[in-house]
Amino acid sequence: MLYIICLLSPLVYGQEIENDPQAKALLEQVERKIQALENVGYAYNLTIDPPEEEHYSVKGTFCQAGPQYHLDLENFTFICDGSSQWVVDKVGQEIQIHDYEEPSPDDLTDPQNLLKIHQNDNFRYRLYEPGSIEFIPKSRDFEYFRAVMKMNNSAEIKEVQLWSKDGTHYHLDILEHTYDKALPEGFFKLKPSDYPSFHVEDLRID
Image (cartoon, rainbow, N blue to C red; front, side):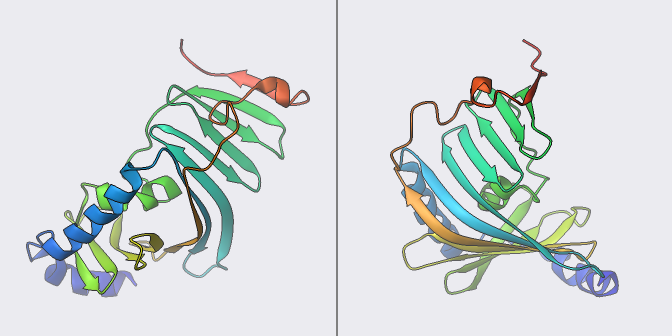
């Protein structure tokens, strides 16, 4: 895999890949749809295929309203109200509370960043095929060398694939979209009293 990347690198990075106007128009259509909503949610399956190892999958649901989000996985739940972030370890029965920090755009293993890859300044993009956009990193030193996002006819993200230089392939498959869902009060906050047997560790500075 690394040998192939080395062969391709002079071809890919030797060109100035400008953002394709057709791809930009498609992405703007996706953004307009999301920005008009109070909240947007996804049910997804993330498959990770490391080199020379068995692939594995992680199912989750993700709901976001501006800087607030609620990410629920099998063993962990992440909740953020835009100021604090709660991390619930369901197996270890522990809750950690942190000051919210926006995830680094360089960490594309985070499903949040994969869903927003079209906003990532590390990439240029172009129309790959109808409804699909290919992302190529601006720098040859970036950890990932290619990504592809596919949309459906309703300007909804269907899937995102990502290829890492270490040979790992990530495939995020969107199973369901929800829009402006009626959310229970306090959905983007966590009350430790709801987890009476869990150990709570408050790591916030303030």
